[in-house]
Image 1 (cartoon, rainbow, N blue to C red):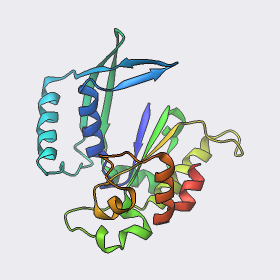
Image 2 (cartoon, rainbow, N blue to C red):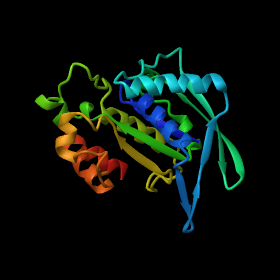
Image 3 (cartoon, rainbow, N blue to C red):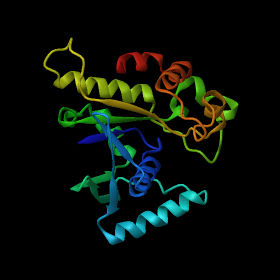
Image 4 (cartoon, rainbow, N blue to C red):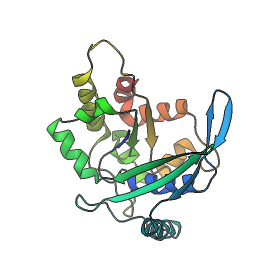
Length: 219
């Protein structure tokens, strides 16, 4: 069970659509104990396959997916095969507003059941970047829930279920920086399609953009 966490307009839908395309491409490999294996994946429901193709085509032609509503969620069921072993992957795209309400209520009890966390960061929600001239684009929506607030609520939820407050949390965490194609981010991190930045580079930029305290708390 892995949670994809982020506020409204952070880019969760685009991330999930792109990840699904990568999975069904047959190019995803897993390395365990030095051995590589490829994952074969396909959508288990024909209607979902048609829906995915429509949304990916729109993205490829410059039209971002519609904003996810609280009532209507995108959901997909994939059939995975690795070394002859089959499994099912189900995921749904919840609206960021739903998570924001959970944050406001301070109710993150589901964290204790997680095997991993993907924490999405919208650079436009960080104080040292959002006011820059090259970060302003009327066609790009920035998340109205700050990364600082998301991290504070996440850490509070983790601390509430830990047995000992002095122990580090053992849930694996990946931090994903979204909207890497806007000029303000490209000028700092380069073209991520040409060269993927290292984790250390991402941490440095998050600090430079005003999230140094949050980076330290997550570490």
